[in-house]
Each structure stands twice: as C-alpha cells, then as structure tokens.
Length: 155
Length: 155
View 1 (cartoon, rainbow over the protein chains, first blue to last red):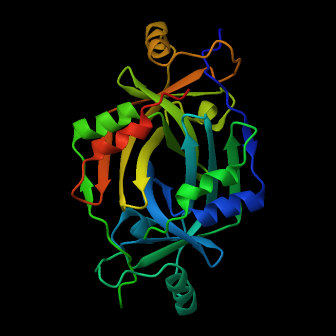
View 2 (cartoon, rainbow over the protein chains, first blue to last red; view 1 turned 45 degrees about the vertical axis):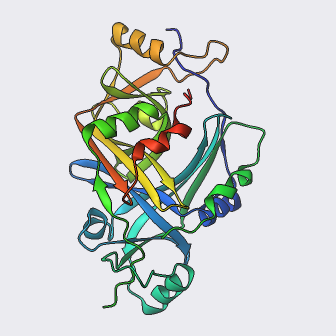
C-alpha cells in the first residue's frame, strides 16, 4: 500500500526542564476530561504554581463538577505553520480541587484576580506535575525561541 | 467566599457557519482520546474534507490503534493574549478509519501528500461533523479577523 502520509516532521522528546520552561511561560491550554459520553476538550487559562498546573473554573462547569479525582490531560502547544515547526507539552494526572488557604494565597500572588471584574470562576483545579511529556516537531531549532509571544499573562 | 476568579471573558457560542469556517481555515488542532488510564491529548495536522475532520497517523500510534469506533474530541483554537480574545471549536464523534478509495482520493486532492518525504502516516482517521460547538471569548470583535495566520496549509 502506497503511503499517503505527508511530511513526517521529526517528533523529538523534550527534556523535562524544557517542558517545564515552556509550561511556565504559557498561559493558555486545553484540558481533556473523559465522560461516559466520551472525552471533552475545554480551552483554559492556566498558571504553573505550587507544583501544579492550576486552572480557574466555575463550580457548575463540566470541569468544576467532574474534575476532582478524575484523571485529566492538560496540553499546551505552539505551531509555526510557515516554518513547519512546533512543540507540545502534555501533563496528565488526577484533578484536585484546591482548598488549602496557603496554596490559594500562593496562587493569588502569582496569578492575581482582577478586582474590577466580578466572576464565578472561583474554583481552582490543579494537576500535579508528575507526568509531563514534551515533544518538538521539526528539527534544528530551539523551542525557547518561540516563547516571545507566550509570556503575556492572561487571566 | 470571596470570588478568586480573574476576568470572566464572555464566552459566546458561535454559529454553525462561523465554526465551520474556522475549522476549514485551520490546519492544526488536538485530538483527545479516552483510555483506561484516562484521557490523552495528541496534537495533529488536520484537513476538513469529505464532511469530516481528517487526520493522518501511523497505524502503530495511540490514535492508529484506538481511534476506530471510539468517541474522539477534536479541538482547534486561537488565543490573542494581548487583546484577551480567542475562539475555540470542538468536534466530537466516533473515529473512523477511512479506507474507501474514492474518499481517500478526495482527501489527497485537498491535502496532497509530499512525495519527496517517506513516512508511515498512512492511516486516515475521520470524525464526522455531527457535533460541532464553537465559542468566542471576549466580545465586540469578529472571529474571522483571526484567520490570516491560519490559512497556511500544513501537512
């Protein structure tokens, strides 16, 4: 059978420190959660704090109601279509609702809430960094070059 | 309890035609697949063809071995950190391995393989467009403005 495949970009595993650096620099990603009806993907803002990927959500959202104790996958990436380059970092682990006041304080200091905007995203879900995998697509370039556009802290 | 939440960007549902237009213009996304060990997220190149989101993969990959008959979630998005805007389109449905020669021909015409690069991504997995949801984050702007950077066709 003739291979239909297009260009196979070399997919190279990143080091743990590269993966963590990319995670630390970013602020948007996606969480996948399995349900009886199959997986869902939810775009999120996140922060890397207290050794976790932390997201804010409403207690009434899919994440808010299902994440606690469930294995989640969190992914963040960057694709450069022109140069056929990219990277992707994946963190997997059980979601935990963060209630410890000291941890919440640490989160607020790194990721301040916006006092002028009311909101109901008052539930913090964290995924510990026990399972991190990073991949680079395409060879001969440094993933850290891509961070310029990613350091703006969104909320 | 004081709300910790940051800015709650208005999350507005996109129309079906807007969601399809965004899907059609893009070429990278992520697929979530549930496994007994929890969900995984796989970054993919994709094409919208034959009423499906189509991805190429190796028969030996996680997708290649698990996708057929399994409910998958495919997501593509765009985040503008500076302007606090973004959109996300989600397609969910059962993965099907595409073997029909006419369909494969239609795919090759829209998404040509690169003849000078050998590869083993010769398995085509499709997700029909029966469940599409699109969301816009932030208000007062047109999602179609973001398409300029997304029309380069990757493989």
